[in-house]
Length: 187
Image 1 (cartoon, rainbow, N blue to C red):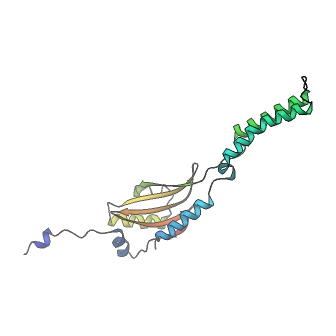
Image 2 (image 1 turned 30 degrees about the vertical axis):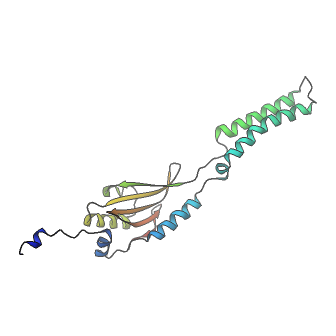
Image 3 (image 1 turned 60 degrees about the vertical axis):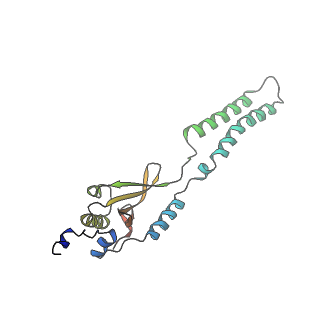
């Protein structure tokens, strides 16, 4: 029939098709996974954070022990010396200062966070230009594609971001960078 070509559904492009059309090879997801795991190990929780329950219990139980030791110095007499009372008070103040001011830094581990971003914000978010150019190229071929910015978060600091493009059921990595230095990039 002469009109069959007019009603045939157009072939849906995939991310792989769009990348292949421009001669771009994405960053392998195994490279991204290895990088993510290495960064989680590198920026893991501090010793104090991992053992915070034991440290807290040690400080709490040490306070009465210091009081008992201070009392034992004078033989548990009814009239304690100023040195005994002062040393017990100094210990209590030290425990309060250490726990209250965060002198011992209880740095938690880092975690990965992913969020959708519009293509227009790539430059504002610090995405290096080679990765941003590839993302814009793919988005021009696949207007419905979603850009996903992955960030390694430690408290409020962002470490080692990466950029994914997702379209349909397909997701590819376009690049990994740190402080503007490209670690891996789709080429």
